[in-house]
Figure 1 (cartoon, rainbow, N blue to C red):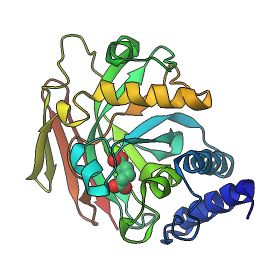
Figure 2: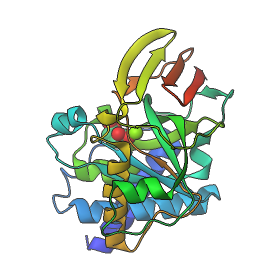
Figure 3: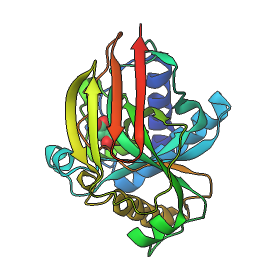
Length: 263
Ligand code: 0L1
Ligand code: MG
């Protein structure tokens, strides 16, 4: 198969897997030529398909695999990014049906909302903080289209870094005087503590993870735009979602956020 056909084929298979709620096997076994460069091309094609078929548009980006624990688990040394779309956003107070998901999990995150363009390739943590209008407590629902969440780095990048849905607090907070590295977090499932962490779990500083992404985006002529939401990466491990579950995340200084799931 020529490369452009392979990009279109894998993007379409991943689009259909999500639309039909069915798992697929990872593609790197059948197509060893699927490297990281090609994977981001497939991700771009997949996002184009979603924009066209769902009549939606880009709302921002997400970082994936930002914690050392997850990177070690996969034997990789770098994070990934994916694209957020408007129809992925869940609203506070909404009870969310798990019916469309394959085997979804949820993880606590910090959302950044930008009011300036951020264009690599030499962006650092300070540039990200300078361009950030607000931060907010957030949670990401991830849902791999691969059987048993079994994939390589290239597979997961092609699958838009397992993105599915996201929710962020409607109350937004200014960054002034908040040290994100030391900001404490408590993540609960059904009122029981599931994990605790601080912002430093995300590559030392969540804004450092976003700086990495801004520099990577510039390789394909992309940038963070004013108004974009960026999920900076999970502060703790993802937890399986079942009907009837309630999750909450509480942060020191920026409040909390809740979400419930039903059949
Ligand atoms: O947002 C994330 O960290 C998920 C990235 C992909 C890895 C996974 O699906 O666990
Ligand atoms: Mg995430």
